[in-house]
Length: 289
Image (cartoon, rainbow, N blue to C red; front, side):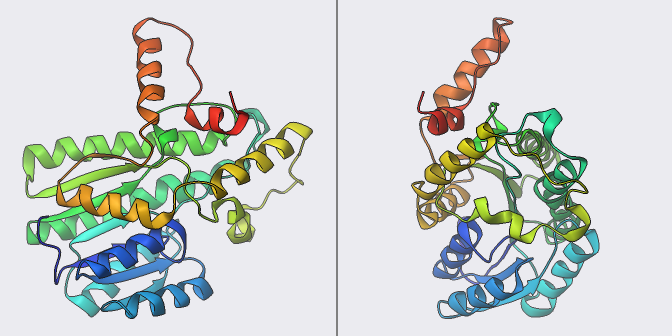
């Protein structure tokens, strides 16, 4: 997509953080913007902010519900005729500092529903629409944690983000073979100054743990350290600028932290040498190692 002016971008998780910054950036590029989020209050504020830049509309959407995402497409077509750029961005982190066996069933379901199924629903709904008019671009938000592993972030988060990278790669191959005018990118950001550490506020009642979550000195200290790392992370508007340029240049892997490359290379070396998996960049950021 070399010319964004007059086209329409759809952004999930657009009420704050990276999503909100991307919505503003697309508006600055001359696009119509459709914002969606589960947080209706913050969404209204974001819609008003983007509307000061360019045409914008918004719809409360729970990306874990397929019919909500279907409604988002209908809403987009009703307001702007069609979608051209779709950013499957909504995400949650899950409880930090817990081993895989310490996560509750509800923890797993919540993180996978938002981070993985949110992307699946976005692809299932919007890709056929893009194919129907023959062009467009999908941006799936994964994470640097989709290319590495470790012990500080929720294992459910790592699992979901690895899956998003794999799905995006599969989508790339399919587009390249059959629909070369439609493109896909996968965003793998490092620490970004967002409110993701407060995502528990938006966990639905049905996915709150039946038993009180177990906290330990380790999980508490990791949670505190992660907050510090996130708060000092890259400003969301810088990430939005990176994504904007990547879409124009049709880049597939989008990184915000050049240091992630060494972590990815170390993981690949371990695989090639049948060694033990190294921890990723986020573990080093949190632990200071």
